Length: 135
Image (cartoon, rainbow, N blue to C red; front, side, top):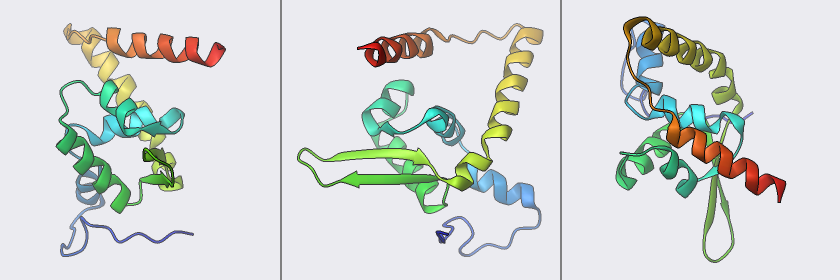
């Protein structure tokens, strides 16, 4: 079993488990990164493509935070050019039911209050991946 030094918990006393949870997965990108990793390993460039609007610096920081807190694993392959893949750890996989509930809630909310969600990028990526897997 891997032991992780939680960067968010190093010098803080939490008064509620929800407070810790929000520190671990809070922010604009962390839950979305975890969501994209739910189906398997992805390289940095694949994640960047799925997150329009995220800067390279921000994505790097969010991935580091998730890794340091034991939610994702970073695999570095000893090849040139460097190859790095990210995947969910067992702890990250435990969080998937929560993400699925959040996804359903967001979808329901958008329907109820007529909030537009543009999924064309995600659909295009999924189609591209499906056609690559057939080859």
